[in-house]
Picture 1 (tube, one colour):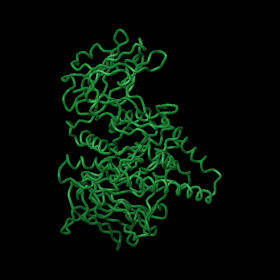
Picture 2: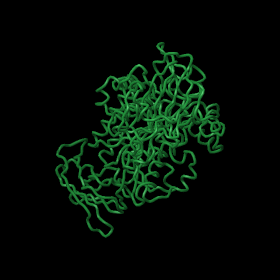
Picture 3: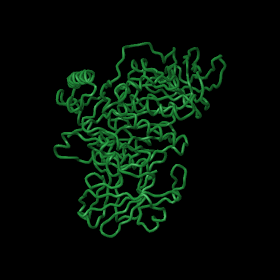
Picture 4: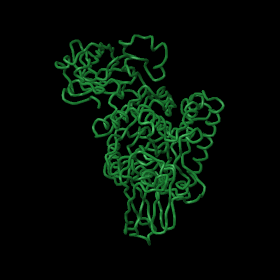
Length: 605
C-alpha cells in the first residue's frame, strides 16, 4: 500500500503568482530573489550577495555595501561578473566581510549605472527549514494556532517562503518577500520552524534577529532535494531516476497536461471539502473525514516539470538560494520514502554532503526523527510492515555517524491514522533546544532522552540495560495518544508488562517477543565495569557533568518465551509502545542491540 503523504492540510501544493514587478532587476543587474527588504543576513561569517548580469556585461564590476540609518557605509566589497555565460547570464558573487548582529540597515548592490537598494535589513541568525509536508504544515493549521498567532508579533523574527515549484517560477520569486512575524503574516509560516525560531528568540540575546528560510514541498521524497549527478552516483539513487523515467516514458505533453489537470481537479475538490469540514467542526477526526470524502488523491501523475520528480525541487528551489549565508539546516522528511526505506540512510548522507558542498561549509544539520504513525487500513489489515522504524534508524544513525548532524526524538508525538500530526510545538521547540545546546553552546539545555550505554546478559535469560540521560527514568503512557492521560499517570512508573513496555527480545530463531521491563535507579558507573557492553564512553558528559560522577539508569528485561536472548529492540513499531522517559520528559529513541556483539556502539551523541 502506498503511503498517502501529499501536501500538508491547508497548504497550497505549488506557489502561484500573477505577473508582478521584477523587484530583483535594475537594468543589466539581477540579484537573487531571496534578497529583499526586511531580510535577515547571517552574522559572524562572510555574507554572500549574488546574482547575475546580462551576458553582454560579463566581466563588469559589481559592488555591495551595507549602510547604517544615517547613510554611512559600514562595510563594502566588490567582485567581477564571470566571463563564463550560464543560462544566458553572467553570474557574480560578492562576499561582504563578517558582521555582528545589528540593524536595521540598507543593502545596496551596484553594477555600472544600475543599482538596487534593500531596506530594513537585519543581521542575525538564519536557518533553512527543509523537507516535506510535516515541515510544510503551516502555523495557522497547527495545534493551538489561534493562541500562537495572537502572540507571534515580533519584528526580530522574520521568514521567507521559497516558492514551491518544480521549475523556476520567476513570477512567484518576484512576489515572494521577507516578512516580519505577526498575526497577519505568520499563519503561512512552517509551524515547526516558527516554534524553533521562537525558542531561539526566547533563549538567545533579546536583540538577536532570527531569520527562517522555508524551503519545502509536501509529498517530496529525498530524491527531489538531491541532484541528478548525486543520485546517479549510487544504485539507490539510480532507482529513483529509473522509476521516474519509466513513469513518463512514451507520453506526450498533451497527455501530461490532461492527466495532471484531471488529478488537480480531484485534489482541489478534496482539499476544499476537507477545509470546509474542518472549519465547520475543528475537532472532526480524520477517520470521519476519510469516511465522508475518501483518501487524499495521491500520488499525482508524474510529469517532466513536476516538483515531485527527482531533482526537481533541488534545481527550482534549493539552488535558487545557494549560497545565502546560513547558520544551519532543519530537516523534517522521510515519510514519502517509506517504500524504499532501505535506501534512505545512504541518500540522507548523500544529500547532507551535497548541501554542505553547495554552501562550502559543514553547516549544522538538525533532523526530526519521524514520530509515531500508522495507517488504520494497514493496521487493521496485514498489520504493521515496520518500515518507519527503518527510516527512524537511518535518521538516528546519520546523527551518530556524520559530524555536526543531530537528531531529535519525537516518539511521544504523532497521531494514529493521521500522517500530519497537528502538534508542531514539540518538534519545533526540541529542534530549538538542540540548536541551543549543540550550536550555541548552552550545554545545560536538555536534549536527549534515555540513551543506552550498554548491556549485560544475566542468568535465566534476563538482560540488563544501562542508560545515560536517565535521571528520573520512568515509564509514562504507551503511545502518543495516552502519554498525558490520568490513567497512564496513575500506573506504576517503574515496571511494565510485556504488551506495554515497548521492549522485545528474540532468541536464535529471530522471532521477537514482548518483554517484561523493570527500572532500577540506583546503579553506579562501577556496575558497567563487569557488563558486557557495546561501548561505554567513560569520558561522556551529561549537561556538562562527567557521566562517571552521575548515577546510571538500568532496566532489566525478561520473557519466558525467550530463555536465551540474542537480540533486543525498543519501540520498533510504526505505532506502538514507547513509554520510556527521563525527568525532562524526553523520550528514549528506538534502538536495537545484538546481544552477541560486544564491540559495536549503540549509544547516542
